[in-house]
Length: 275
Image 1 (tube, rainbow, N blue to C red):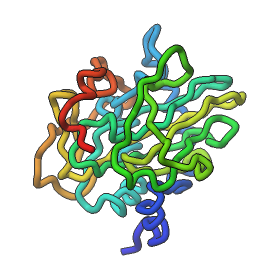
Image 2 (image 1 turned 45 degrees about the vertical axis):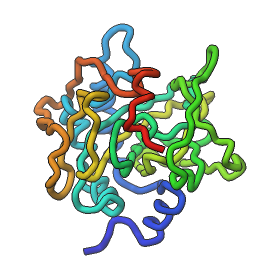
Image 3 (image 1 turned 180 degrees about the vertical axis):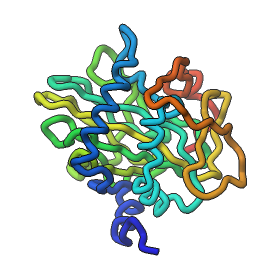
Image 4 (image 1 turned 90 degrees about the vertical axis):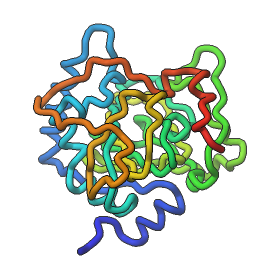
């Protein structure tokens, strides 16, 4: 059977920590995707932002089906192996003329998962380029373990309160992940990455989906809402609670999202965070 990724793409993922511009949805699919996104946005209540559209794949068949798209799962299988699960999704939407940025960070720093072996798929709903705040990465930074993340002081434009210490890296090596709408990128949970604001007059919307091999266990004392869907293969470990497939086409969750991202300094000191 032909692999979805070439040997050189797999080698780049292991060497640099990411691959990008992988085709999934064509132009004829994008209209349907954006109709679905509009339906989900309509479910937000007064005062809520698009950051609330998180783990809604548990309630929305539209989002669930995207996360379980065969092309996406074929790519992921080349990197995680035959047995893995889906456990999270988020929309990251930078509206036109937005100064909101994302500081340097490692996803694994925030996730109470052990071992560290997860990845993120980033699906572009719009073209993503330097003009509208495409992602920046430090290639190879996923090989160095977890780095110190320092708390930011004062008012700032970042959506995160912490910033990864990048002093060990030459920032001239930064690479950008630029994509056309309908393409995906994939990056390691330990890759240092971030993104600037969007000063352009174009939206930059992306949906992330997170996947882990079945031997990865969540610390439910940090994230008691953690649930998984078997994406490929079988789960012989049964470490994590299983979720039910949603039946409503466009649905949303009503719950507090408790994870280390919200739990503050006390959770940051949890012993699961190994160096």
